[in-house]
Image (spheres, helix red, strand yellow):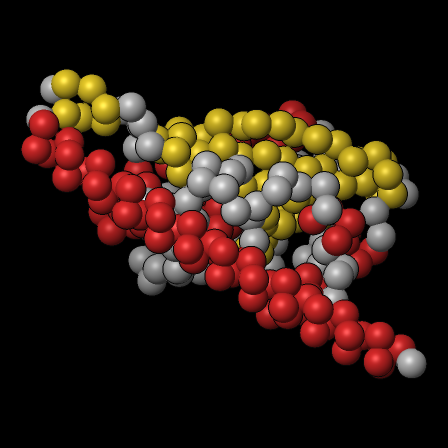
Length: 245
């Protein structure tokens, strides 16, 4: 009976994720087409464009000991993300909300898997506790939500499902400056990069380098021109206002 229920959940979750991915792909295409048209218009009309805006929300889960961390704990990583994307891609990060969920989260939500296991968790409904609290996905300019969880399986401290989800998960230890073996301000920005369709990059100085090992092996935060283009054309990114040069 339990196996049948899981198969039913898995099938339903697979359909939901496929629909979400298709919707995201279409919205990304619309956003990219708009960005291309604006770029051409700016060149023809001699305009320059103000910085784009990326809206980011934060959801802090709670376990039996209370909230996993505080808004102040996450603030430094959010400021770092703003600096990284502003400098490397001309995108300002605007924090829409930092919500503390005081309701006790189930262990499946507190301790999700990583990569394919996170996708499986999502399809089986284990992420529903926080997913159901997020803004309605799909619209251009919709925020990316950072969900702070207790622990992620394996050696992973952050994970994203790419265009399939408008949320990413980050482990709470990333935001604890007293834990020098875990504290890493690049992970939040790295996972947001994945949510905005950036793949991994082989250069350790790049934000999208796959691994980061504090305190001595933290990845860089550089972005290549093509990465800037991908970020600015994404559905989550609101273009800046055009103005005469």
